[in-house]
Length: 349
Image (cartoon, rainbow, N blue to C red; front, side, top):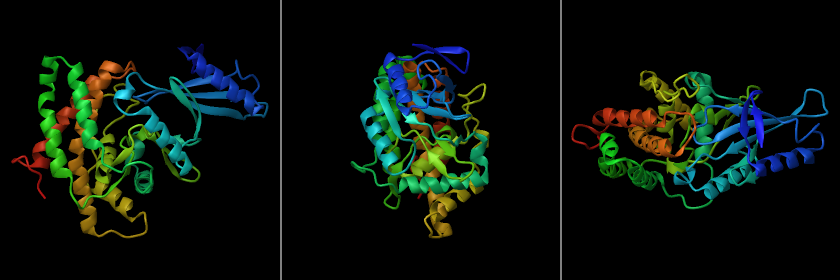
């Protein structure tokens, strides 16, 4: 069925989704006309799925029923197991984290709409907001989730590298140095896997669009757990720091501005709040160690999202220049590697 988004653009929703939405709205009992009164807003900034806000007027003055619809992107099964992601979603809900799952249809799902503000790119640089995010991230990492607690980062990258090679022409693969990335992944795994590093349940996609804040309570909610898994917590911090260079709502959302990468003081402040949020004050040595670990894990982040962008360019029809995004992530890896790995190719202790 074709429906209008934002009042003018038409989008075709699957029939199963429309039946689900009408059934939900009818069961509430206060929606004026469940089938024809729904209003659709396309929420921009998502790069894996298409996300829509659906609302209906009710017979109560100035009160609407609102849900969020997530239509899965093309080929996302190459990135993660959808059934595992749904189980994570439901478990997070049981922990009181994130929205509730309201319904599923073959192409996606319907979620509770969280009445909080999604962060903007600039919010990540606000010291108060950044401190709220740091404390929330520590809480997230300490969640007890079912299933194995093994680090998945390295095997996931190897799988993605294999997929990327299958899509690319030999010329393109040579340009992006894909044939050398297997060795790079092995080197990073060996050098970054340190005994002192904490492992936790990581979000792995901490861009500003996946972070929401309630303006009244100042509580933070992390959403979208598609890439969530157990990993070194330093990797998740590195991911968040890397995301501070992006603005996915600009005229060129694929362009990354590394001149605004958080400086040492900003990273130290974030890490200190992160470590102290459980009530124990960390030593300067503990802060510096985690800051250093996170900085080294930015290399793994660049390879991870570089491979993601490359595969997405062949699979996803969302309006986003995945290939240029991928090139920037790979370029940043090779640019930063000499400093972070040292001239000998071995990470300094």
